[in-house]
Length: 84
Image (cartoon, rainbow, N blue to C red; front, side, top):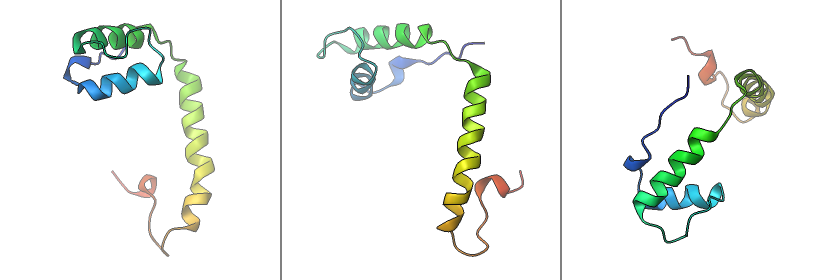
C-alpha cells in the first residue's frame, strides 16, 4: 500500500532541494506548484523492495550497536533497549 505525501505542505526551499537531490527534470526556478507536481510524480513512481529495505535497516541497526555503545556512558541504555 503506497504512502501518500502531501508535497504542497512543504516549503519551496525543501521542494528545490528534493528537485536537486533526485535530479528532477524541472527548471531550477520553477513555481511551487510545478515543484509539487514534479516531486509528487517522482515519489509515486518509486518502487521499494520492502523485504530488502527491512533487512538493510536491521543490518544497519545491528552493526552500529557496537560502535555506538563505545561512546555511551556506563549503563546508559540504547533506544531499542527501552520498554514500550
